[in-house]
Picture 1: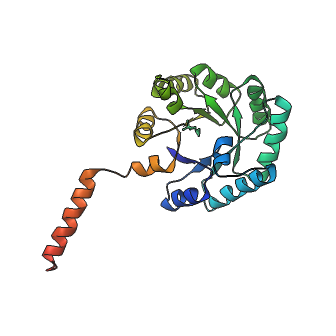
Picture 2: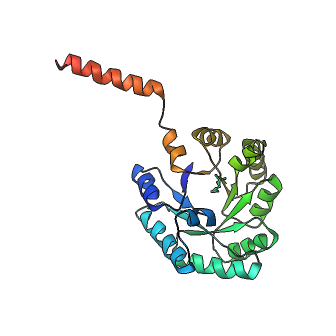
Picture 3: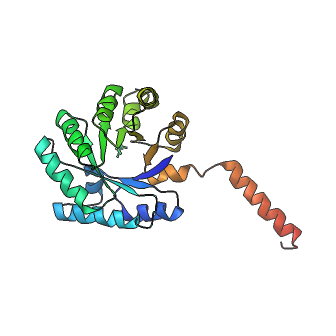
Length: 225
Ligand code: G3P
């Protein structure tokens, strides 16, 4: 199972990368705006900075960079520019009609894509047919409207298993550590998470209590107060 960080914040990406458990990064226009990255050249430069953080990875470090255009020609132009930036770039394309066409175009030319804004199994099926490298179901946003996001994950896992699609399931819109564990139970290929959700996996009160006791017993046994 791969862990991606869902942010454009360089400090957080470095922190997660230093942990040694990071396999990549996903961004979107909202996350870039949140970091104050505006203007085409600044956006492109920022993607290169993110890719450079992962350059020591021998097993790849995928960085999803999203197009802004919503028409086929525009997506192709932008996607080709993004793919030229660095070999780790995966072009992120929204699940719309021209997006499906653009994904097929990129697939035929060896450019990897991540199909974003997936909210139904039918959309995930189309993305796989178009040859997307990754499909991104947004589980948190489904939970927000009282639809269980994990049910969507289960449906996509089943469909992809039925036909042995190569498209990797990249669970997105992760909001907490439990989402990560639930996705792992369903066998997703990747989770993309905010840093607090990943760090939340560390926590258990019995670990804290147990460690305090070990250290206390060690002190006692070694004659320290
Ligand atoms: O990767 C998609 C993600 O950024 C959306 O997350 O929390 O805005 O629904 P959220």
